[in-house]
Image (tube, rainbow, N blue to C red; front, top):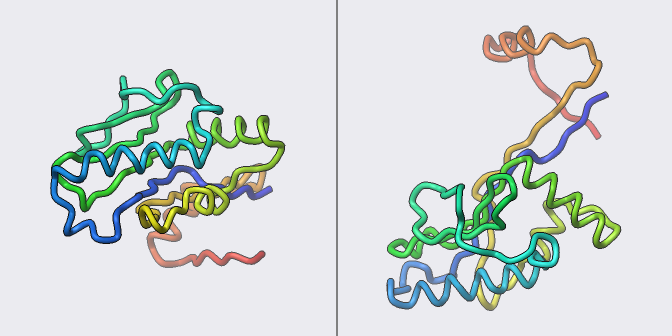
Length: 163
């Protein structure tokens, strides 16, 4: 069996004219983005109160929030660099928990595309992914992962995807 899924991702919310925003304007704007994000995704219903991060802090972000007591994830921004926007960063464990809780609460799967559609707010900010890590698990396929890796690195194998 071959199982493919999203391992982790970084989502960025950014003002369309980020290069024109002053540092004084940025903090209230970033906080508004986060408030909208939390409401749009109903995050507090799934995880409780968003609070200052007690653990994971992505490099270069001064203000970082998360739902403490969960695997590493962050919602944050840099006070001095509005061009970085608001970062939503997850790891695989947190993303799995998010999907499970969403399914339990709403009875439907949360896919990355669905999340992306839910967070759109074009009058307030633009949205893009700065990172999406994919994972493909070969379960009981009799594949020697080390041999496959060496073969790919040496250019002896190609990977094709068919639906």
